[in-house]
Length: 103
Image (tube, rainbow, N blue to C red):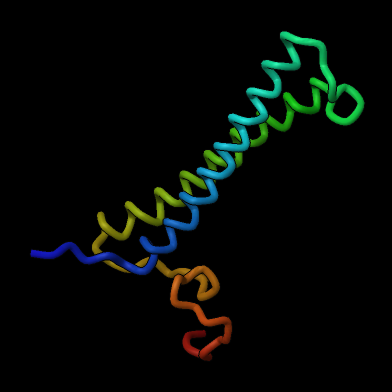
């Protein structure tokens, strides 16, 4: 018996991809912060330590929110057995024009 995949679960892939990108950026900023903390800072003029620390913390919040949104779009249809309403622009099959369906 094959497992059906809902359209809203396909939308979750976009959220997980964005969350992974933000997670990677957070790791890069964290490594930059480690290097700023240990060695003399060559980027002191363009990116101070406290600004980089704020960026690092904000990236944590953003990737977690995108991950939770993707997780919700993935788990809820499977548990409820019904499709979630999704904006047409988020659908993987969206061609860019509104078909005039729905209200």
